[in-house]
Length: 217
Ligand SMILES: C[S@@+](CC[C@H](N)C(=O)[O-])C[C@H]1O[C@@H](n2cnc3c(N)ncnc32)[C@H](O)[C@@H]1O
Image 1 (spheres, rainbow, N blue to C red):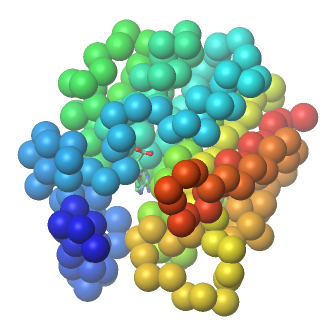
Image 2: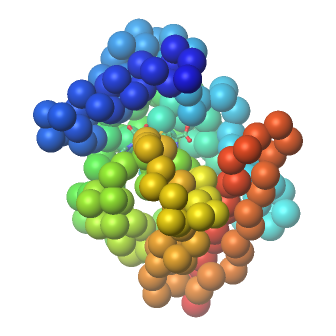
């Protein structure tokens, strides 16, 4: 495990010991002190599976919600495509950092919690994006958080989730992150209609990743 992962684990283990399971994100961003090298998920560019989806579906821009936006690369990508973006994260330091990095007039940066989404977000977004949040939080939070995604999708909207796929559920993974089972992933869409499930293994990686997409009828 490299130093970045070791630091992540020490923060997540300490937060778990204190029973504050979601606090380590803020601590990690704070300690990074504006140096993205300490944020292992931040690659400085949008997720390639998001880019692939947008390029192959060519949707007209509307309203987009980026859940757990981190340092904001996906939000910025969508804004540049013409979407009116709301990007939120539970960690105030991440939101401040992302808004300094990408001060785009069509991005509304918000501190928020997927476990208690803003009431006015209900059915408000033509595109709801979740990348690597559900896999980063323990199951007792993951399940209720996952149920809060589909109600945010507008009547003609889509929900896109991207993360790590577990190929053998009998193996107990030491997370975070915790790769997700196909059964759990399929439950995220809830009452939406599934239109894509793509597993991918990128060159040089052992991890299998997935993209799952649903639409409202
Ligand atoms: C693994 S990071 C991924 C960040 C970003 N989506 C990316 O791909 O670069 C998970 C993010 O989810 C945020 N997060 C965790 N729990 C959350 C919650 N309940 N509501 C909103 N954001 C949350 C964390 O602060 C962190 O920025």
